[in-house]
Image (cartoon, rainbow, N blue to C red; front, side, top):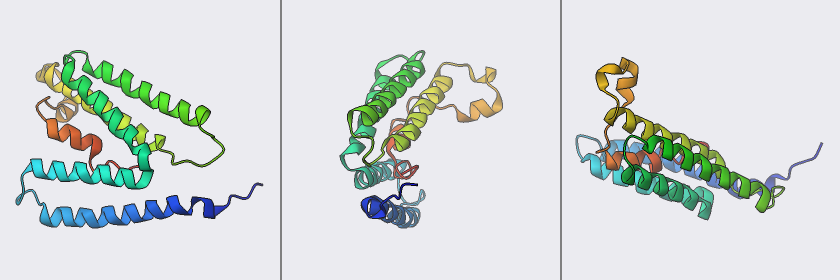
Length: 178
């Protein structure tokens, strides 16, 4: 049995624990000072998005740019393509980019050495991207009376621009699978 040197991973463990504690404190601050009755949804979404980007950069360094790039490309697809096909395009592009990042991480970079594994959180972001795309498609294209009640509950409209960005990059998003 090969012994794993823990001091090699100490930096990443400390970053993870510090980021988790900061996220918990930020959530309390967010609830107290940015309460929905005190601030507008736009301000809450902007703050959550900026915190999410900061936490991702803190935990993953420059690998976090992959999160921004994937979210930006698929968000552009959501804006530029028609609602009828955007869910399919977003699924293909998000899974393709995730596959590309995983393959380059495994085969191009040294797989035996530990690097910040950003592909785990990227899988969650891929799920969120495709979920948002399918929810917008269901809310805009499919006739709501024809949807089951549980399906109707999860559909949304394309006009929720800041909410989409917050779903993809919000500070609670960066904490999943860090």
